Length: 305
Image (cartoon, rainbow, N blue to C red; front, side, top):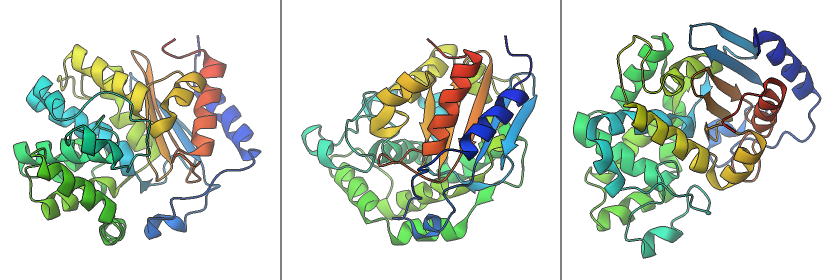
């Protein structure tokens, strides 16, 4: 049994320094394109509150699709299983921003972590709360203990300017009645959600409710044990775009990546992790991030398998 994660993280940090071929940042979002792909940070948060980190683990970055996990949890807590009438739970096998399957699947996205599915979840949370991105930000501030978390307006504006494909997804689903929020409002909420900045420490701590089987940091319950299992399961099968099978094979943990270079991961009942490195592979996942999590589960023996 690992007594302290810090030596493990330090070992991983040293190994990552020698990693060649770190990938490249998400160049289709200009505000992210200039970030150095060789930057790296990693944090582990235990359920007793201990947090360990290495590298730039306290450096804020653009969270991007990592936030889809938290939006899903907030909506699932409010409407329960009726959410699954509007979004599926299966891997897509296509790029995260693909429109292909929506046509023959009648506007129902395959899962909540591809862009189409995340737009549906944001739509439903906004319909229930009137402020989807605000509710998400409040939740992340509370769970992380960092009240300074905020939206990077430059990144949100950059995504808005280059958001034609997301607009197409939203309009297409609206034509099937699977989007109820006016599309310009929905896109504003979605881009604000993706443009929240947080550090590895913030996200590792904020993800803790999934390792605690639905229990928040203050001891109150957000999700039932069954719902927490559902979120972790969808993370495992769909959380790293169309590389989820390879991620499960290498890492063996529920995880969710974002094109800002972050990946969060959950060891149920034990701890949560976040790793950040902006260089991405062809499927949109952090090259160094996947390698670091692979090493973590190999060294510690902690996985769901």
